[in-house]
Image 1 (cartoon, rainbow, N blue to C red):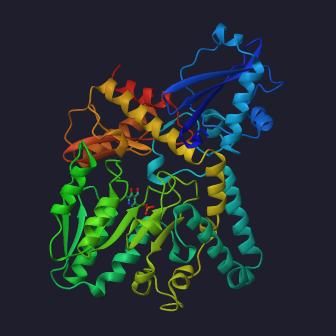
Image 2 (image 1 turned 180 degrees about the horizontal axis):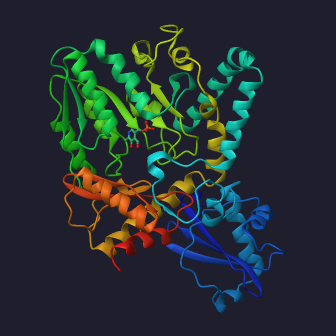
Image 3 (image 1 turned 45 degrees about the vertical axis):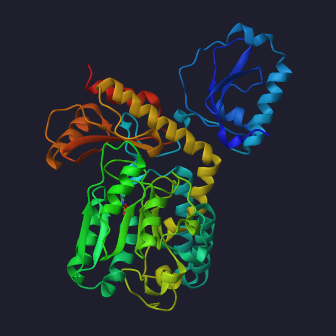
Length: 477
Ligand SMILES: Cc1ncc(COP(=O)(O)O)c(C=O)c1O
């Protein structure tokens, strides 16, 4: 049987055609482009109608496409073509068919801008936001009943659903507002355990807020923060592992490792980095702020002690939805940064109540996952990854800048050197960012890293290739 996980379907609707209504381009392993055209399918001349007919499947990346099918294709008996198409779509299960243009209207993103920064804060779909509002109303209708009777079960059920997605048990998952809070919970819990001269190891790609948190912990405890320079540009993941391992010493007690880096947008080989730590008895906290939704996770098998990740970036949850996974052996020493009634009662109970707050974002994880899966799940990941590479290639060619990382180290983001001669400082990065927004209505982050300015583009479901071409033209016209 065909490996459906490796099939990507791109489709386009032909609206002006006489005897066909739509076309589907199927790429098998991206090596065998196979065009299947169906003859007139009743009234299915719109994406929505099409999805109703098939109740199906898609990954939708509009590609350059001839509006009329080659005549030779009409020589195939239509039943064969259509039969094959249906089989493939059925194998995919129940996805929704739509286009990037349609999809963008499922978000709140305003018109008239090129939005290439999903990575910073995500963007919530209207459907998930509506579900969040329902939870808020449930809270307001009878606050006491909600907090005492409904909330505990809802939180744990949401954690279990998330656990199934990230390969973890619900009871090892605590909700936190964001990855910064997750990192703080772990690192600040460890302050009393650090001894003078202990070392906390991280890399130069570390997220700024996490670096400050580690500095704070070091200052409070007498530990020392060791930040190794991990290369960028990078040619393979072993260069990252080698740089990281070189920073390990006999005093290293905690390693804080990015899963997907913020300034450079690359996927770190965390399995190898964790293994290097575990061989030496070093505790590991993974900062997976960008990972959920972008890469497949199996936290139970990963070997880390803690893993924090955002659901509000790439998993379509509303802002303020993140998690902290803690290995059972570490749960007794791991506390939320805000201590409340349930101190030392149990890991999940401590985190589930840190004072009165809006819990609605945590409860929408099942809704966010539903949106994610209905829009392709794994197929969506493959589509966004391919688009990020395509984007990087467009910019690389237009600006004559080499790709700074291999494709395999990219997820849904890609950094490319900015085609400017200004110094790679924070000040210059802000100026360039503002110029792109103020003059061109392009929202894209400019990151100063290794004395160079990098433009980091994101690729999410609503992005299309033309948007990266718009960015490319800013510096080529
Ligand atoms: C690697 C990394 N860690 C942590 C964070 C912080 O995420 P949050 O603002 O949701 O706490 C980010 C944000 O972009 C990040 O890229």
